Length: 197
Image (cartoon, rainbow, N blue to C red):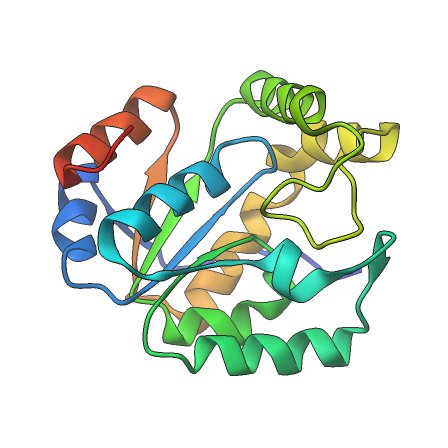
């Protein structure tokens, strides 16, 4: 297991207003955070607003039909091809591929909703899509909700942020990072961009 060490330098945090200015010219945007926090919703809105391709890591990289995980070497090859494109909004955290994705990213939007908001997000998503794949998921992967996934979401904020910070410090210390911690902040970002909330 990898040892988590706090980065020695802070990441390049930007405000919502500063992120809005960057977004107006950025061509490669990475949206990360816990499942259920609204990454995909935000990514879709940004994709529509700027005409950039929305890349769902779940749909295009990780999963094969029947919830079979694609081999890691294939995942990395696909990610390498995707990030080489000139314009995209990439939706997915997966810190093990940050070495490929972060150097090509012009802005990171880190969706950091509260734990209960994420739990509500995954539960309401399951109720809506139960038995069917949602648009951000690979074909043949119907929406599911199990104890393993609930535990992953419940413990995400205590496990993953330090790793994210380390990866940002290592691979993209100068890339602006905007943290979105509330639904109202997400709406404010979209309002500033003139995108539908």
